[in-house]
View 1 (cartoon, rainbow, N blue to C red):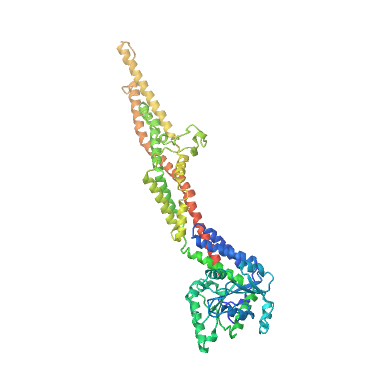
View 2: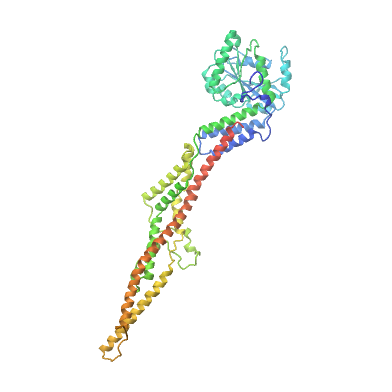
Length: 572
């Protein structure tokens, strides 16, 4: 706060800031910080999340208490004259002051406007309270008192020294640094550069410059020209702490020099009744940026089609889908041979077991299309595929890991880890679900090709012709043996018909079987390709539901986390 009533929010005049209302930016920022904290659960360090939750809880508690009161805390080191300045500002000798040792053992409050201040002071844990109704006798505070009466309630706190040797005093100061609405730092010309002050308090509170005042007390100990030099040096140190353009008030509690300026600055802050809101806004922004520092990184690459396709290919291979595809081709060739081969040798094909039946993938052949009996429900079955080898398990794990790494590329480490965990969230169930996907896939195990029936009919006609011709020839041979005189067999172009039937039927059947064999192999390849596509689609659905979708949800969670952080840490 400068002497003309301006704060440090990019030169905005504090007198132009409207009083907080419901639905203010603070409401939205608190909600955003709460959302970011919830979304970061399990992803960010517990300490950072706990600090953010504490800010949200603290803000809720402060807003439930008196909004008419502004709480101003006087902070300083031993010997800075903090208590003397407190007395000078209030116009009452309330605080016990001494030059060489700490005299403030617990917080003490000077209260103007007692109504509603009790619960607020209870929350601040301030037991020593002095209610002031007007300026002290013999003090020239009448004008300031009149202005203060228009500014609502005001609470000034004299606090223990932050460098006190008593641990309890330091804890009190650290607690109230996080609770008061306005921070007044009282320094003296000898210790204004104290490293503990700057490192432990001023630098961490750089975001709170809008509610920070600095008083260089005891300037009566400096020669006139030295005052400006020390003030300039102090401002330079504050700028290094991030407290750019924070007002510095040279004053002397002993002589009263500069005290009026301090009073005026405090009165103007209280008159706006926005210091509490400004303080909470700064707390929220600081907490949001702290979460952001734990989450430094860019936007993850996301789930790409290429990465998802490679994942499905690897899972298909690891799940034994290629074995099933080969079995489909072998089953088709076996069944095709049974239907189109030479009937005399078909029995040889029947001796061989169907590979799909051996894998437990050929059930319910007599059921109507689409019908599934309880015994054939794929959810109740597992395939008889060989147990996955260590190489296959490593292949599947590697594919999932590579997919997660690709999708999380660009994200900060904490969220990359959570995306990887999301990708493996169903790792235990994945083998069973892949097996069920294979079992549930319609492999058309019992389906035949239309041309098989035609070839089958022709084969049986050829066999019938061959049998008829052989039987006819047998009858003729038997008649000759028994010396029966039978008419000669009719002929065609000099070839007896029985001979033509026998030889032609046998030759046609064998030739038809030879011609059908390559067609069966072509059909087997086509059937295997269709089975591969269907199996891949089923495995892709499992991969999408159990791997890709959890990854997408985690990436979406990260996006919402970033949006919430941006909303909480922004200026508006």
